[in-house]
Image (cartoon, rainbow, N blue to C red; front, side):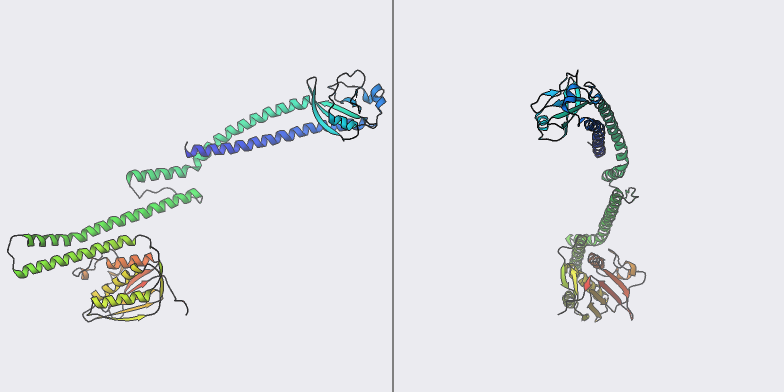
Length: 448
């Protein structure tokens, strides 16, 4: 059964239940009103005869006690004595049933009460009251007209209930058609995406209800998937392009070395050196590609780490790797919440980039405070036209195309910054060189 059919069925069932309950309430109220009218008439009749003596009822010498017959409107009268014998007006031969409750009233042990009974196929309403001289008086009126009216009302209520259920089912189908239209569009869109792989598919998300919000969330998810897929394709294309050159050069050098031609010793050493260098360059490129791929995943178990200590370790490594560069530091205690390994990689990339662009025996200034790492070199600086793109994957300025590097180091820095809710900025420094600022979610250290 489809969702639309189930929804229509539930709506029809709810309306049907409401109609049935309403019909039952109406029937009970009308029945009580009709029977209440009969009860009121019996009470009035009882008030008229309650003061007459037993002799008057037996002899029938009072006009008010003249027998109207079992179906008469004024009420059929019967006296029940304490021993269970009955007395009726003259010419009345039909006996009303006498129960133990009636006998208790005749013996003065009970009060007035109403009851229903059937006598000679006539449905009667009987009001029993205690008499003035130790006997009980029963006054009966037929419920024939009341029963007939209730039968007609019951019939009409059943018809109304059945009609209401039919209308509810019809309207339920119409309402559910409109209600599930956004779900249907969402389903169709997801099926088209599955069939075609086209993540640019969007659905109409106008409105403020839950289904409109669901459609909007679906569109947001598709947009995120489209962007992720586009980034993956771009990464693969860029990686293929970047790997093509070293692979081609590496293949050429290996073919030359593998050939039977005799090469001068110096030429062979140069080719071997180039092969080793190209392998190292490819290894670095592949490692950075893996780093970028891992960076797209959520941070694993972030923790509070000391950014100043991470920067100090990175500076120590940079000093060992770049002994010709002077690193001057200014560190203040700074706490950040994140992944230590990725932050170390980002700070190390900033230092490597600054050292690469520094002149021989140059100086790199490193400062840390309140969740920021500032690295400033004294190299030629970044051209204004290149500043907006230095953190893009595989982007290399014209001045950097002859230098070693994959063009991924600064892209990793930006990825780490964004993963930690921060940012990275590159700008030309006063007096020459470049200043890069890595901002993370830093906070002041706890008071000691």
